[in-house]
Image 1 (cartoon, each protein chain N blue to C red):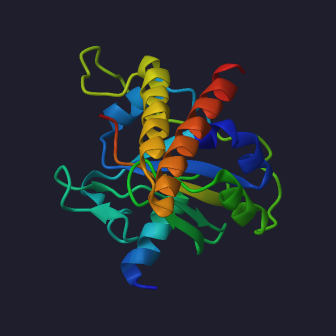
Image 2: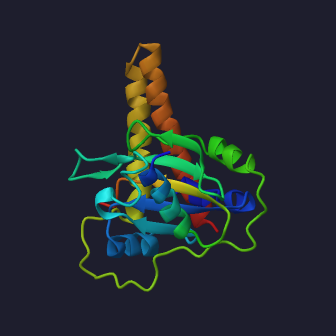
Length: 31
Length: 183
């Protein structure tokens, strides 16, 4: 895994509230 | 919306939902206020620099750069254990596949549902160009009947299957909306 991917995963975990798993949904945006 | 309708199952599997787009925090706060997704945390990633590009879910060509629609499961240590990337914005995986991936992690249930957000962000009254909750039913009913009509005109089995998939997607959203708004 690249350093940037690892950094992104850390960023995702930083945004969770607990210490469990994360279901990440990416979406195109509100319009 | 479909994820919100199965939030109990997601939390029981020890997971919380994060929704990432390039929208700014104000637009996401408006979305959070407008939609019945009380446990979803919306995360803003303008330009996709922090999350979307590094994990390969960024379409630089469309609308100046937006997220590619996908569902990804990260275990509690941040390792990716599941990914479904939709072919387009209407293509989402079956909920059971995602729940199965979460259950397989064998994590304890969340002690309490996560608080969604962002909160505490002022949303201006003149925020425009957003999808209104009132439009969801006619929008997806229209999708459904369009898919039924097109499916009826197609003879090719594979293409008919695509029309059927689209109808089932619309049915799923309509069912989820009914479940979420009846609570």
